[in-house]
Image (cartoon, rainbow, N blue to C red; front, side):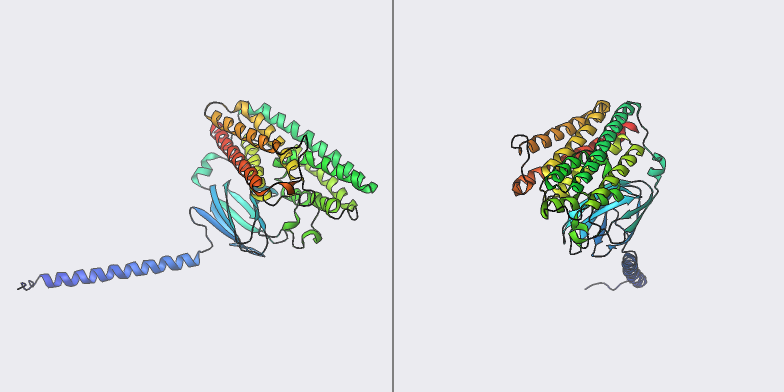
Length: 397
């Protein structure tokens, strides 16, 4: 027989039941409050990944607030068109991903300083979203800029000379292209077009960060509402479309003239640009990732199919950046410099393997498995430039 509880045990059991019931109530209440808070603040990013959904007309959320420092973004294309997603500060592209297909996701990582930013939301004609990057203890302690090592003053000056020379060549050749288009000679205009493209591609890593000029100089019809018939379809690809798809110079005179004017504007911007070692590395990394993620699979030169020529010119510019930084990347930064050089050599060898004599083949002839190799090589190069930039920041700190 079970013994009857003592007179003092009954009150204790009652208190325990009350305490247990109270704990369950508090658990349910706190869960409800957490859910309500989650619903109310659903537009806020998570601690690890900031998720952005891009629809046909806007981003969701369209306004973001994130702390300064290294942030990872996951971009989901919920629209019916391929998109590019950019983080912009003023007219400068901080980070971007190109050619995100409908229903697909891509991630990007950016180190953001406190300030106000914009983000593109689908079509280039769509209103941009807003992003506020708030200060942190770490960002306050680091100051506004990384100190420039004396060892880099010479290389940066040399790179500035290189960029200025290429920008001047771009300006001259763009003027010659405008003259060739005005002459009415289709073959002459095609030759001038290819000659103009080369110096631009060699400085695209830096020049392509000016979003306003980039959207006029090198915009793809893919990101415009009316594609090739869109009034904003200007610059290189509009001329390329006329020369190689329509086989006509009709309507190209004004486009070529504006390209020449924008080339002069880019030259002036580059003269005034303030460069730092890690900026060169991040610019090269951004371009290499643009190529890998947005251009290799589908091609960028959809009418002339001269993408391999573009890639090779881009690589020449990136080689110059790496070569100027390498001598000052000593000590702890040396492994990153060596890995970067190895990746550049790998991309160069891969591109050379497609040549027939001194000429690259039509990009339409490059098979899917070959494009996959090009994509992987540029991904590795982007990672190597990113690692070099991290090493430079550690050295300069």
